[in-house]
Image: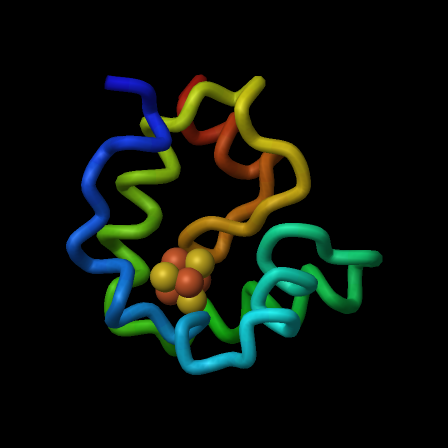
Length: 84
Ligand code: SF4
């Protein structure tokens, strides 16, 4: 099973799912700048499944993370935590 196939039963409850798909994609998958990253992270801050999302993120191979935000963290933050 590839990492992308790991079940994410908590995902439908994510605050990012309340956004229009194009907005969610822009903020959480392809943030254009630090302002958009900060907005995505702020949304994660009010997400009821943030802990589960963050745990999931810590299992993602760093090389598989591009510009995404997971559990309120960007690639650098996820990588730092997985190496701690
Ligand atoms: S923590 Fe952030 S990325 Fe994860 S499900 Fe919640 S809003 Fe989406």
